Amino acid sequence: MPFVSQGDIARASALCGTRFAVLAPDLCDEGAAALRGRYQMLRLRSGLTLHSTDAFDMHDLTTQLEHKEGLTISLFLDGMADVELGGRRFLLGPGATGGTLEGAVIARAEPHLFRRQGRRGTRVRKVNVSLPLDWVEGDGLDGLGGQKKVRTFSRDHLAHVRFRPSARLVSLAEQVLRPTVHGPLLHALQLESRALDMAAEALAEIAAVETRPAEGTVLPRDQRRMWEVHDFLESRLDGDLTLEDVARAAGMSANSLQRLFRSVFGMTVFEYVRRRKLERARHALEEDGLTVAQAAFLAGYNSSANFATAFRRAFGMPPKSVRRKGG
Image (cartoon, rainbow, N blue to C red):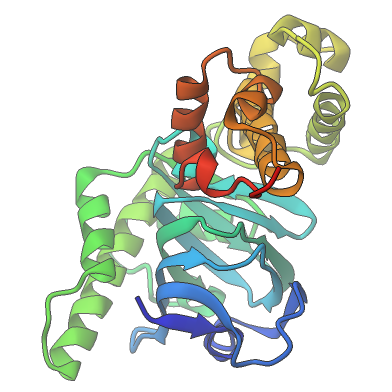
């Protein structure tokens, strides 16, 4: 696979934002390899921006960018993204949902700081289609049902919708990641066609579910409550909490807790806890040289085989491959 340097990423990122920076680690020069695989960012004739990645992270790479206003449609086929936008954390992709494919649309009514935390060795296969706000407000939505809902959604800063992608949408993403070999002109037309089809299908999801409380935006007071739940869980990862314990601490019903927590963090309470325990186990393997059995126990698994399966699903590799040698 080819290598992608931090300079390549910086130049590509200029298509969707400004002030790109690598926060960690210090890769010394812009020619230093950051990814291994394929990475592309294209401005299409329609005004949309297409970003596709099929690559392995070579570092625990933290990057940031001031993203322009607009809508971004994301479809992850493998791996995950741990991103922060406007101070809100979003965990996207099969690695964050226990292997379930999930599409997401996030609205930015104003430019906002975007930060991504990559994990070394993780393979990410994803397609993003970004729609500038003037495209949404102009005639870009002509012919789409539910135009009013989509425009209202796009003006609601950091509103987001998650949905189960259809087989057709997954196929479109695969065609972007593995396009049929054509000449440059036909290749560009193929990518433009797939991007527009992906946008149309995802925007139809907004028209269908944007008004549902579980999928739409969350009131600021409820966002604060969910961050309090987040901190409560973080302080008790070693404990043995039930959903009822967490709901009681939050002062709400278990059903309301699950609905709001998923709206803010994109997963259930215990999907989050399981993910965090796996991340701690990975850190212990990498930094402390724990055995796989010890890491499994730390993550709350009685079976090393079950732990290895969950670890591979979350990070795209077996736990033994990240263990520090000599530990």
